Structures are given as structure tokens and as C-alpha cells.
Image (cartoon, rainbow over all chains, first blue to last red):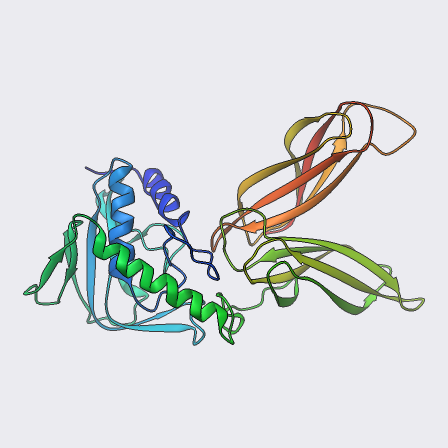
Amino acid sequence: MAVTLQRAKELFNLVNSKLCCPASASPPCIPFTYPDDGCWGRAHEMCRLMIAAGVQPRKIWIYGSLRAETFNNPSCAVHWGWHVAPTLSVSTSSGTKAYVIDPSLFNEPVTQATWVSVQGDPSATTIASDASVYYRNQSGTWIEDDPTYSKTQTVLTTYRNRLKLRSAGVNGPPPYFRCIPKPSGVQWRGTIQPHQFQRWFTHSWPASWHVFWTIMPLTPCPKGPQLTWTVQVERASAAHCTYWIAVRNMTSDTVKFEGRYDILKR
Amino acid sequence: MWTGVQWTGTIGANQTRRWFTWGWPASWHVVWYLMPTSPRSGAPQLDWDIAIERANASHCTHWVTVKNLTPRTVTFEGRFAVLSY
């Protein structure tokens, strides 16, 4: 049965709210920020959650020489031989369309065409299936189900652990700065360790300007507030000042963040 | 830039309470400030701190901790300004 696009967005938000805090990745979270592998486990768990919410998803499988850009891999891309995600049948003004629910690639439901287009292989093959299909090979000669979700849990555990390992490594937790363009109004990006208090400074700002500083975490962790900050100012000369911004990590996970400024008056 | 009132609150004498507001686009530059609506002259009434949670890749939750510095209940507006979006 088809749902509205608004309902599809609610269901997207429902599954996306289960995303893992990368450094701790505690069950029952879904490791969306480890896009490298494990899509079949994520897809089956998302289907379980959506079925429990009263809808009947399906799945879309894609096979090919796939490459998707992502800021959640240190190399800014992932390469797959195949990929899978749930779909929902959505009522639109031009009829019913399948929308894909894939938080590892998007921030909202997208059409199947959009989902295919970001995976870099115009000749890729897509196949739709029931949600009950847990794994299938391209030819369909090997199909597995997982009605108890036990295999799903094993896969999720494996990739939660890989996410934790990567987050503890030299590149830290996702996202990876080199993969994200720095927008205007961002002075710097930083990483702050669990429960750490660290201070940054930025100098040579015209003292006549009215500048407001804010901090925004880049590492998602939907468990509560992550960062708080204070701003102090030093009048370095008659014309210029230095801002000192102290950031406190309130969590037990490493957090990447950006330091933002807005010039309210020049 | 635009401004607004996100919520109105009441806080008891010398109390500290925390509010949160979720679903804000993380790309927006948002600042938070309070304004007491129960007048009392002679000393500051409220202090506040902001903390922030990245709920997912595109949205965040702002957490506002309010401290009543007075021995009386204070009502207030929780105000915001979107500086950039």
C-alpha cells in the first residue's frame, strides 16, 4: 500500500534516528556512517523497523561496478559490487513511485533513479524484491531470508565494530574533513576527545566588527548534547582583536566539529 | 537574518532547567538568547548556556540550559536568530 511522501520522510527519520554514534556504536544502533559494507544488514533492520511502524517496504538491489561519494570514508568514496536498500511505494501526483530509504547515501527519501544515479555505473542492473529477501546474488540463484533477524544482528555487530575501529584510528570518527567542502562562515574545523576541554584562538579580526561565534558538531550522535563552548576576546592592538573559543566535549565519544562565525556588523 | 520566539518558559526560584529544540537544519547559523517577561529591576535574572547535538548528517538539536539567578519565579521567552542559512 502506498504512503504519502510526508509519511516516507517520517519513516526515513525513524530509521535514521537509530544511527550509531561512531566511536561507541552501541546496539541497537545502525552503522549508517560505515557505508563501506554491510548494506544488507542495515536494509533488513530498516525493514524491520518500518514494518513495526505499520508499513510494508520492499527492497531494491543494484549490481554493477559501483562507486558512491561519501564523507564517511577517509578516501571520500566507497566501491561496491552490489548494494541494497529498502523502498516505499509513494503516492505522487503522477502516480505511485518507489522511493528509496538509504541514510548511508542521502538525508531524505529519494527516487529510485536518483539512488541509482549516485552509484556511478549507468549500466548497473537493478532488481526489486520483497522485504523478506535478506540476501540475493545477481542471478537470483542464491537467495536467503532471515525471519528472526539473527543474521541481521550478526552483520550489524560486525559493522558497528568496524565503525568503532575506524573511529579509534588515525583519521578519527566520520565525517572526514577532506571530503566536505568548507562553506563560508566556517573559520576552522577541529576534533575534540571525550570529555576534553580545549581552547582555540583566531587573531587579527578588526575590533570594530561585531562577530558572533558558534560551534556545530559534524559527527552525528543522537544521544544528547555533545558540545558546549565559551568565547573570550583579547584586544591585541588598537585596531585588532583575538577571539579565544573554548570548546567542551560533553560526551564519551570523540567529536569533530566546525567553528563558525557571523559578522553582524562591519 | 531573521528572529523568533521558540518557546515561553517558567523557571522557579534559583532553579536550573534545560530545554531542547530539535529538527534544525545543521547548515543554519543559529544563536539563542533569553528575555525575562516578569520584570524585576536591580539585578540580572537569568543566565543561560547553549549546547548542541548533531542528530544526523543534516539536522541538529539545540539544548538551552537556563539558570534563574533570583529568589523568585521568572517567566521568559526563548528567542533565536538565524544569522545564516
